[in-house]
Image 1: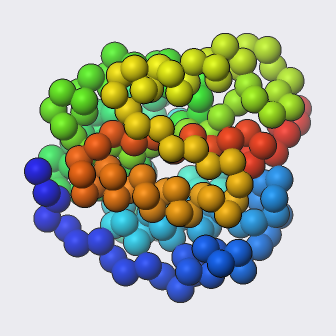
Image 2: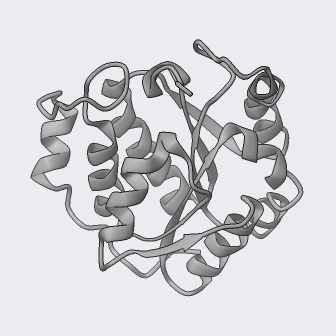
Image 3: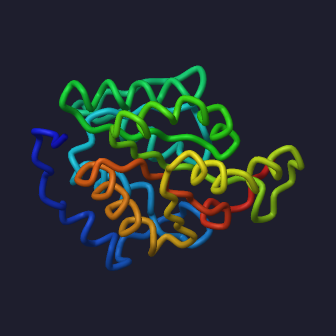
Length: 197
């Protein structure tokens, strides 16, 4: 099934971010990767975002929420985002699901929907339980995130540096929307920086 909408051309801001020219204080590396990812999603013609509030995604959530061309859906639980993604595709739009690794376990059964129906799915997953994690409750699901997603048929691509983020999201979007695949981009905790409470 091909979506009728044609992706927009990459913006100059995306090009700058790819070359490493866009800098700010986000993440451990100092690169302004959330803004670069926002432009990559816009270039892929993403028109809907579903999310459970998460500090690691906060800048990207803000950018997409403030965009009048993007419908934002705040979720009570992550698996609702799988259904929203399927509904968006059936309605002729592309969507992205933002969640934390701890929410992946909530989605496993619902992930059978895009796997069996061959709906595209693009999800960006901020990882916890890895780099300098202070909360032991985050560690088990962190270990299980990629194996669980792969077991249900979701392809996992990983980004551990700001330099990898845009290219990885662009590749994931192409796989999802052009090849009707289910793809998760796992955003390494080291990129997000040490969590502080």
